[in-house]
Picture (cartoon, one colour):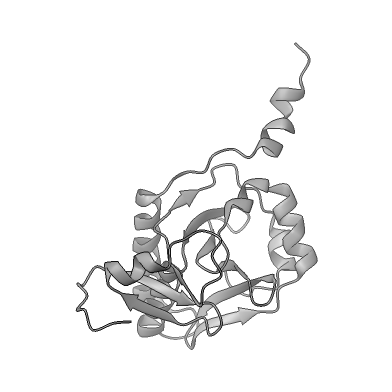
Length: 199
C-alpha cells in the first residue's frame, strides 16, 4: 500500500469492490479502521470467536449446496447478501448459496449477527468423526484465504490427501486456541428452555 517495508507478521486491508487483500504497514492499516466509514479499503480485524451453542443439522447443510464439509461465509456489502466459499484444488470456489437456507440458520443462531461485513467470516467445519455436528468460528477474512492457499498447494487426488487433511487439523487447532466464546445474543437467552421453565 505504501513504500514502508512490512514484517513477516503484518496486517491486511481488503478492497470492498475487488475483494483483493493487500498487505499494509501499521500506519496504513490504521487509516482504514474507522467503524462505519465509507472507505474503498477496510482493515481486517484480528477477532476470533467460537460459538459453543451453534446449531446446524445435516439437512440444513445440504440445503446450502456445499459439496464438502467445510466452508466460509461473509457478508458482501457490494452485493448486499451473504456469500459462501469452500476450499478446492483450484482455490476458493463460490457456492450458489440459498438465501432461504442461510436465513434459517441465522434465525436459529442469532449470535452470528456479530459478523462485520467484508472483513470477517464465519468458518464452518463438520466435526471430526461425525458429519452431523458442525463447529463454527468467526475469523478474519484473511485467515480463510490463508487456509485456501495452503490447501491449494497441498491438495492431492480426489479428497485432498493426508497432507491436506493434516494441514486442516493444524489450522483449526490454531483457530480454537485463539478463539474466545462469543457473547450470548439476547434473543438466544430469552428463548432458552432454561429461562422458560416455571420457577
